[in-house]
Image (tube, rainbow, N blue to C red; front, top):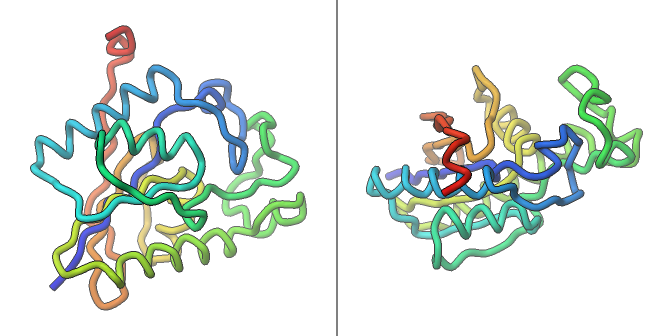
Length: 194
């Protein structure tokens, strides 16, 4: 028996639009980000996917996304799903990021190391999936840096970047996560005006 985890990145935010490092800092979803979340919700509806449990990071951009993806669904906010803490680089221009892998770079700036982020995401998601019943479908909304670290920690590789509201579909069995699908929706900016 297996379980499925749908791990999703939040919608576009003001900081994403301004090309600022976000991390533990928060900024609101843009109109485009809100529309992206609705498109992701439509994907789940069209696929007939109903969730047995839902979780989001404690950061508002993640919980606001989840509430637009599955309006009215009860969910829990968890610190273990938070984005990477980038220390003094928070809210700074993205061009200041070094080339990956980042290793301990942000730890020396008062933030977290890559391995710390991998560990807290892996631990949190493993605990969530372990207590779910068989054949459960779980939605968790988190952040780009955190999702990349988690995917690396599970031994899976991403062949492309994680767009806003990207969905990573993982098969979970016997304590192992296997990446089955990456859903990056096409998005028409003209839909912002609707």
